[in-house]
Amino acid sequence: MAGRADLPAGLLEDVKNYLDITWDDEATDKKIGGLIASGMAYLDGKSGEAEDYTADGTPRMLLMEYVRYARDSALDVYENNYTNMILSMQNERAVARYVESAEQAEP
Image (cartoon, rainbow, N blue to C red; front, side, top):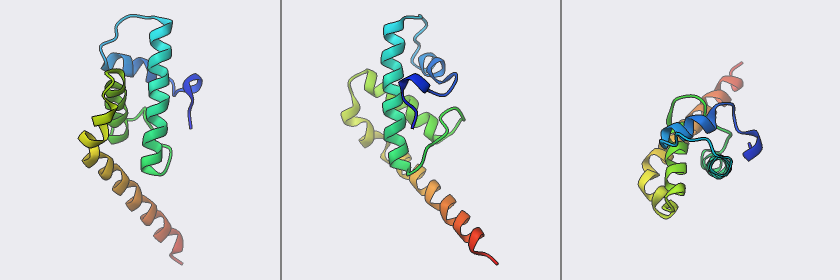
């Protein structure tokens, strides 16, 4: 699990761009970096594995929205608003794990 100090390359800048943060400020970067790390831990826990948040897809979109909600002090409604997408991500991971285990079990 990545911490604030070791976020994937470019992710902080991508999230700041998503949030329309156009300035460079150490305090802002520290806050957004912490929210990203928290969101990654939360979503990795929901999916059951470490996700790739640098690639386009559901995990990245959920992370961007997690940070937006957290920044706006609205995490209390995040999961409710994104339950369908979180469940979809969980199902995708479960199917991928099943396929992998079935392939390994083949003689």
